[in-house]
Amino acid sequence: MHCIGLMSGTSLDGVDGVLVDFGPEGDSGTGRVVADASVPLTNALRAALLALQHPGPDELHRAAQASAQLTTVYADVAERLLTAADMAPTQVAAIGAHGQTVRHLPPGHPGLGEDEAPYTLQLLAPARLAEATGIAVVADFRSRDIAAGGQGAPLVPAFHRAAFGRAGQGVAVVNIGGIANLTALRADGGVLGCDSGPGNVLLDGWCERHTGARYDADGAWARQGRVLPALLADLLADPYFSRTGVRSTGRDHFHLGWLDVILARHPGVAPVDVQATLVALTVEGIARAVETLDWGHAEGTAPQRLFVCGGGARNQAIMAALSQRLPTVTIDTTARLGWPVQWVEAAAFAWLARQRLLGRSGNLPAVTGARGERVLGALYAP
Ligand SMILES: Nc1ncnc2c1ncn2[C@@H]1O[C@H](COP(=O)(O)OP(=O)(O)O)[C@@H](O)[C@H]1O
Ligand SMILES: [Mg+2]
Image (cartoon, rainbow, N blue to C red; front, side, top):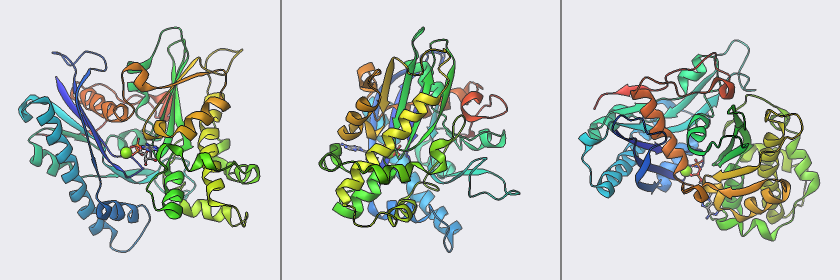
């Protein structure tokens, strides 16, 4: 059984894809990646999706148009994967397609009124993707978990367990996308997880505003700045950083507008120092999540190993600050385990598509807070 996983995260940088061989019965654990491909979003599509992150006029029509355009990029990545693997569409059982999150208001989100329903919304046109590729599509993975009382996120921990779990060892897996999410693989086999807070989303926005570059390549700009303790403390005063247990977040909460309100209380700070401070914020969110998750033993809070994936693993300022902040933990990227950092999320959605096809659950109630395990995603026939 072969499945494709396609992912476009909060960073709005592009669509990452992998084609995974799950073995004859679809049963070979996390499977083997046989091809990978990434396609960046055009500036126009990125701008359209960014504008849709917040309420605006005629948004249903604009959302439908952006969905169709994004689907063209998804189909392009799928096409490239088939070409690279020299396979026909009929040889692929399904595409697991995440879509583009434009709203994420899970239970407990401060933007929800008392009588308002929690929801999460990923733009994509799965019917168009099935038409374009001739492959079955599984989409809309998150909403069932929310319907079952969960956060709908993070969904990758079950895959992290399958890929990176080690019996008898506490292992943390941190995906640093736009938002950073942590999976705790406990030595006793238990799995916990949460969104730790912003990953790259503020770093990217601030970097683009002040340098014109869409992101701070290798963290080079941040490394020229110094962390501003008063600003960092003010940023960390946001209640999200004091929450423990089940929680998830998104651009709805962490965006440049959020930063600007706080910066107004710190006049005259140098942009490069703000960038360095935002690195510290991302790292502190991750470290607090690592330290407050229940690792299942009384004496220690820290895992032995921490593996980083997602584009933030390429930011040397983040990686250096993580090592400094968590000195007792051995920190590597997932590439160390044979999983290049941009594969992991896409592979998780290939895995989730496989789970859907086999009628198996995809969420972990201990992570999302859902009432129970659920089979995730809607299936569009080829
Ligand atoms: N060489 C690099 N140096 C620093 N940051 C990088 C580099 N490459 C990617 N990134 C960061 O990773 C982000 C993309 O990561 P990704 O895992 O795709 O996140 P998402 O799932 O949110 O799309 C970019 O927006 C950028 O912030
Ligand atoms: Mg991305």
